[in-house]
Amino acid sequence: ETGVTQTPRHLVMGMTNKKSLKCEQHLGHNAMYWYKQSAKKPLELMFVYSLEERVENNSVPSRFSPECPNSSHLFLHLHTLQPEDSALYLCASSQTVRGQVNTGELFFGEGSRLTVL
Amino acid sequence: AQSVTQLDSHVSVSEGTPVLLRCNYSSSYSPSLFWYVQHPNKGLQLLLKYTSAATLVKGINGFEAEFKKSETSFHLTKPSAHMSDAAEYFCVVSDSYNTDKLIFGTGTRLQVFP
Image (cartoon, rainbow over all chains, first blue to last red; front, side):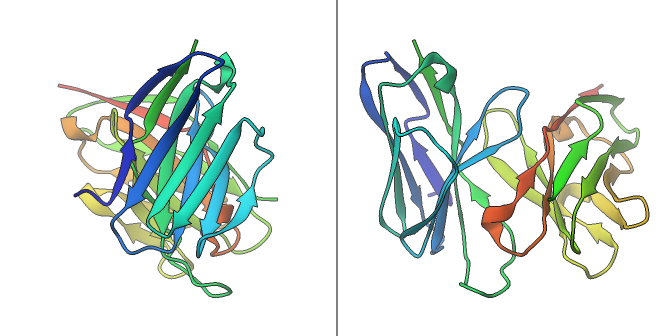
């Protein structure tokens, strides 16, 4: 098993569909992240869960809904998306300790390539 | 506020020649700086990191970067490029050690010709 696994790798959906992206990490980390990667733009941090608590939501539209049932699993629920939401969605994990220095290293999955028609 | 600028969107080199990928940063405090690499259809992988220890940082696959505070730069270098180095490289800055405050650059695509 690789460290961070994302499924599906590719997803095509219509604007009225509801789908979910799944991420699983096998590294024993306690923080998980969703990033959006679009062409010609920097990676955009969407959500952060640390110790299963959402600690950051960067002005992401409500059509994206994250869920973190435990420290190993992270979901991104998608509904009524727009064509501009087409992108590569990357999940990452890290080991972090509240209030203390951590390594700053993120471990990424291979991403889910989303196309919205 | 912190920011990072990757000066070249594309760099092309011949196999066996040196690689230089440029990165400048802006930071209010002593920054932590990172380089990540993304091979085609893969996630990002940490190449190396600077966290206020030695200014010359060695990473994986023969890459290294030098932190120059006076020039606010953190350029990535490798003496001799290999075909397998072809990928997208991201310079990343953080003002704190909190991972969720990482700021990514727009990336530099490295092409390596035989």
